[in-house]
Every structure is written in structure tokens, then in C-alpha cells.
Figure 1 (cartoon, rainbow, N blue to C red):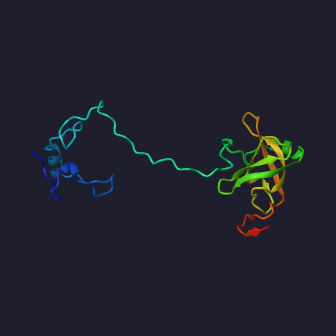
Figure 2 (figure 1 turned 90 degrees about the horizontal axis):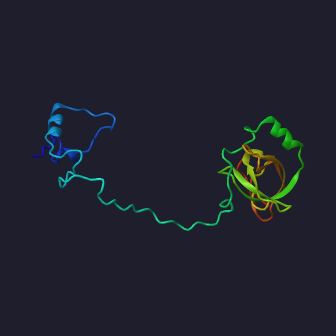
Figure 3 (figure 1 turned 45 degrees about the horizontal axis):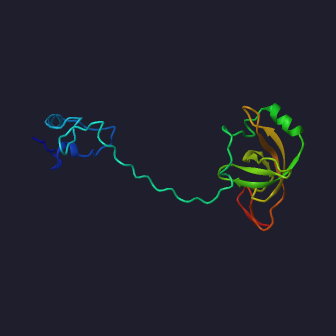
Length: 186
């Protein structure tokens, strides 16, 4: 025998909460209705048969993968945690500032992500660039010529990161943005 709610003409196990899930009023009538419910926690309310762990799993319909546009940052590994100017030790800063100045071209830079990569002119591997290490008023864009110094990336100090990055020549024919948000066409 199914007990019906005082508020709706539906069985108790189908009634939805109208209050917040962490706050509910529980009256004696609700207790009686719940105890008179013939289904137990291990049975299905529709057919009364127990739900077993051996029953076939339902298929999960995942969204199909979409074609992505080629991203210049897709093949690169980003250091974790990101080494920033604020987290760099004083000794690492001194070593980097005393080092030689290199030239390169900005391969890609994402202002929203706060990092990008520089391709060295001498043909070495691409070098990681963090937003905190850029000096000057322009956001780097693809094709900008830059000068930079290098610093090793902890914890293993095997890879290098560009520091004290300065844009020397803006890429011709591209729009450049200042840090304040103004767009300038070069």
C-alpha cells in the first residue's frame, strides 16, 4: 500500500523538496508516510526488483570531440608552478641580470593566460616567457623582435625561462595592445 502526501497526489518517494536541501521540516505524518512505503533502499520504486551491482552499465553519451584550430602553444609544456618574478629568489635574479642578452622572436603570447614562448634567433629550443618578466608598454605579439636574458626554471634547473624581456621591433602590419588596453596599428 502506497501512502500519499498531504500536499500532492503523488507517492512520497516521488515528492520533490521545496525547501533548501540542508533545511527541511520533518513532521510525524511524514514519518508515517515514509515507513509505509513498500520499497526499500535496495529496490527500484517502479518494478520492485532489487538493483544489483552486476546489472549492465548504462552507456554514457559524451559530447563528440570538436576540431580545434592549431594553437602555437599546443606542443609546449608549461612549468608548474609557474615561475614568476615575485617567486624568483634574489640569487637567481642576480645571476640572470649578470648574464648575456639574447635576441629572439615572439612565437606566441596569451595575455589572458599570462605566458608565451620566444623562438631564439640562434635556433635553439623555444623559451618560456611569463607576463611578469615583460618590460615596456606593449603586450608582445607574434613576430615581435625581443631581447631577453635567461634564468633557469626550478626545481631541477634544467630548462630556461626568458627574463627582462624587451620588445625591440614591433611586428609590421599587426595590431599591438598596450597594457592599459589601447590598440595601436603598426
